[in-house]
Length: 108
Image (cartoon, rainbow, N blue to C red; front, side):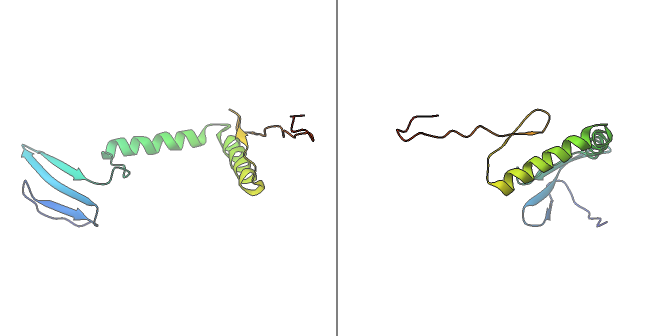
C-alpha cells in the first residue's frame, strides 16, 4: 500500500483519469473529492462489501445457475444462427414465425 501525506486542497492522481483531492479535515474525519469518468463506479468500502455479499447470496440461490445456463445457451444460439431470438421471462429462446410471401406479394 502506498501511503502519501496531503494537505487540504492537495490532490493525488491515479492514472490519467482519476483525481483524488483532500477537501477538508474536520476532527477525525477527512472529506475526499473524487474526479473520475462517469462510467467508473465508486463506492464506499462498506457499500462495496455489501454488494459483494448480495451477489454471493444471489449466486447461491437455487435455480439461478440453471437460469443463467439457459440464458447463455440462448445467447450462443442467437449469435451462431444469425437469427434474432427473443428471451422469455424464464430465459428460453422464442423465435418469431417466418412470414413468406406468395407470387403476388401477399403474406401467406
